[in-house]
Image 1 (cartoon, rainbow, N blue to C red):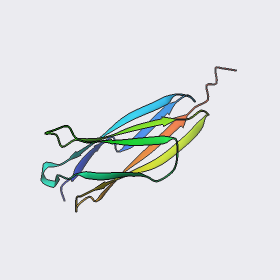
Image 2: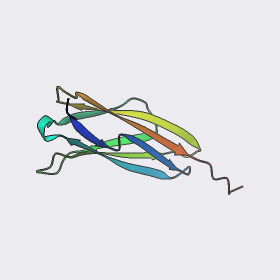
Image 3: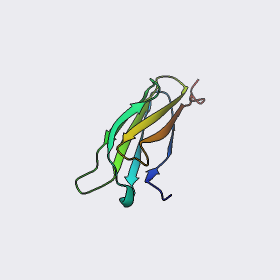
Image 4: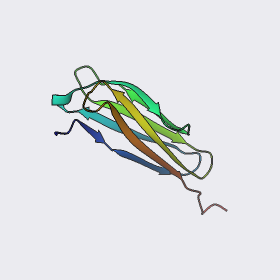
Length: 108
């Protein structure tokens, strides 16, 4: 079967220092032959990772998910974002998100 969708990146890996706000943008492009709409977004875990669905601009098919993460302490955070679509070929799209906050060893 042909590809139904192109997701860039498929897995989001963020890293920074505690207190930083980390951001990423995921692009979801339905293939012309399998055009679909995204009807909702769910997060699997209740974490410091937030996701916001951005609808396509007029005349575009490209959806985006803006991902932000914050943590006040050194921590490894993980979540799965699930997008619900109206496609019979790809009813859900999963995006894995990892955020790693490393303690700054140079500060003592």
